[in-house]
Amino acid sequence: MKLENIQAQMRKGILEYCVLAIINKEEIYASDIISKLKEADLLIVEGTLYPLLTRLKNAGFLAYTWIESDQGPPRKYYTTTEEGQTFLEELDKTWKILSHSVQQLTNQ
Image (cartoon, rainbow, N blue to C red):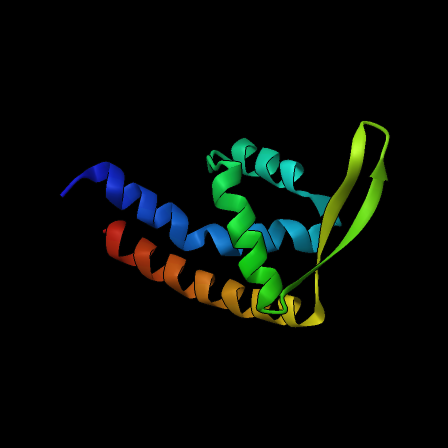
């Protein structure tokens, strides 16, 4: 069993939650999402983020608008939908329960 594989799976498991939490705070451009994830030491590449954004949009959790840019073509900015906010609230509850459980088990 390789440690790197387990670490990658752990990060992937919370990525949707983190991305939804970021988008829920403000209308945001994909590269800004990547920057915020990197600031939090959750390293991610565009090849991982864009399929995730597409899945969340197709599930009805995200919407986007095209906004003109001074630095090139229009940019796609993401927001959470009402359904996405509800889903995020449920993920938040789940995270708090899991986090508490893991802390109990590992801090003995």
